[in-house]
Image 1 (cartoon, rainbow, N blue to C red):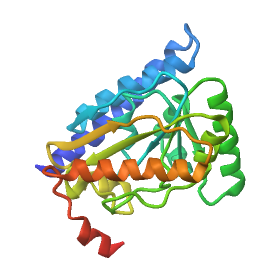
Image 2: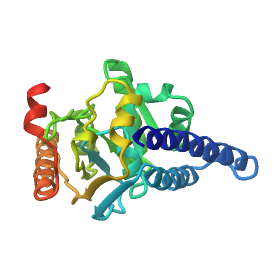
Image 3: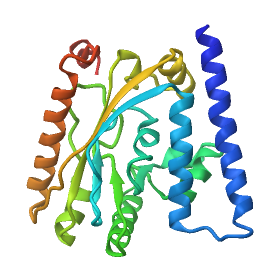
Image 4: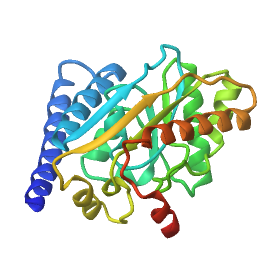
Amino acid sequence: MKNIIVFVRFFLIGATMSISLGVYLFSTLFSPHTKSRGFRLRRNWAKLGCRILGIKNKFDGVAITAPAIYAVNHRSLVDPMIIAPHIDAFVVSKAEVESYPVLGYGAALTGIVFVKREDKSSRSATIQAMYEILERGDNVMIFPEGTTNLHQLTKTYKLGSFRVAADLGIPVVPVVLEYRDNKDLWNIDHVLPQFAKQFGVWRTHTKMHIGPPFLGSDPEKLMKEVKEYTDETLVAMHEGWSTMDFHERDDEV
């Protein structure tokens, strides 16, 4: 039964993504691509994708109206899918995603900024892109841990985005996303086995919380405040709900 669920879901994810992108590209013959249309495409497909994968998300909080940097803790490759229906933002993502068939092109079309984590020039270009995005009044979403995390609390945050926020006087809004079960920890190197482990069951339970905006002129203090808020919220989310065994996982990392 598990193999059937995995196959059907994987097929539907690929098929609906391809169809949605194809229909959208056809529509641009009559109505040009715009930022708002790209975000709407992402929102609509993300909602459908969550239904296909059986993701049951308990959401609370409100995105602010002013331009902001949304800082999200990182658990899984599907984190952006869960967040997309609630926040319109240009997303900073690892460069490997750009090479994925269909997904990479669709991601670029709907507001993804790719960065090579080991390439300093690419990171500098991404920081510059963040300045430009925020200065024109748009939002940016970042995963400041840089990679998925198996620990209960967040890994060390990267400072660059907080420097941008402090320099521009832009608020940083913590977004806390958590999964309920051990199967949802991203601890397999290859996408397909991880997908099978995570979505071979009928339901995936998640919680998502948008926190208050944090402002500050000291980037290190700003980063510390956002990280502490995220960690405290993760602890509160776990109580009476999470079945993850983080102590055992931490010994493996």
